[in-house]
Amino acid sequence: MASGKPVVMKPVVILGVFVADTAYRAQRQPRMGETILGTSFTLGPGGKGSNQAVAAGKLGADVTFLTRLGVDPFADMARQTWAQAGVRNAVIDTPESYTGAAYIFVEETTGNNAIIVSPGAAMLISPADIEANAGLISGAGVFVTQLEQPIEAAMRALEIARAAGVTTILNPAPAAKLPDRIYTLCDYLTPNETETEELTGMKVSSVDEARRAADSLLEKGVGTVIVTLGDKGALLHSTTHSDHVPAVSAGPVAETTGAGDAFNGGLAAALSRGVEPLQAVRFACAVAGISVTRPGTAPSMPTLQEVEALLARGDLAGPGVGKG
Image 1 (tube, rainbow, N blue to C red):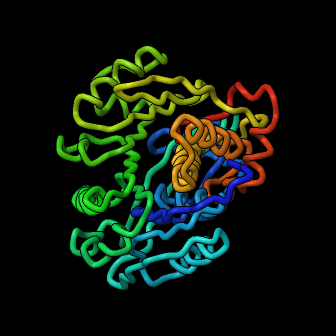
Image 2 (cartoon, rainbow, N blue to C red):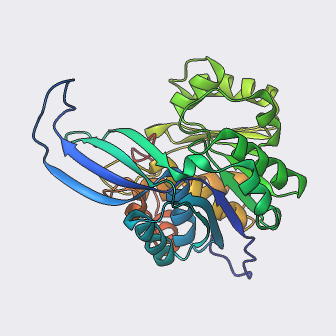
């Protein structure tokens, strides 16, 4: 995103969840009733919305993260994580609940993952909370949310953003059925293959299948669909164009956890700088491509300098973007 012209950054506001990631690596998952030995354990910051905010913040975007936290050590971890990434927060303290946590299993041989999330206080985010922060949302240039907090809150935030002319991004993760009226509130919808299949009922195992599924999402009222395709990159699809952007390889894959969050944070950061959509998607692929070469979620997010250095290289297509 480097250029000779001054960059005017529009604010990014992200609504979502913070959870403390408890990540276990092992050769395989245990069967029910079985105990196995793992090879490592880490505790660190996570949650899709928080990861996306960290990704955008480390890329130099002007980011504010809106959520609820408990009043506990995991909340302290959240605030420290955001401060280090340059992310402001609009936290609603919730002492009657707890800060969320996630169980992450990472398969030792492949880096693939399986995740259980308990959002805790963030599940209490309500439309009233959104109304209380309407000025923050309507003052953004880009608004992003996901499906880890209650859908009613996400919907109200998208409505406020859309009414104010803010560019809206819905990352429909984790996979879930959505109310029809939410689609018309999305300038960008960013599902991976699994989420696209859940939303459309259509199999997605190739770029052509992704195009057909994306067409059905456009018919529901989405402005532009971006299907993330793992090591096949991403599909940018609208009523006027359809572009397959290859994955951007930054090296051997260590762990795909958080790759989707890296992509969405990168997309938001690029759009907030006025980058046109096709280049924004390529930039986001590079962000994700770097993130999967490192373990963890928020700690794996790259800086703007790292991404620009990667994009300045020549042949970049190849494996490197996970479903996360």
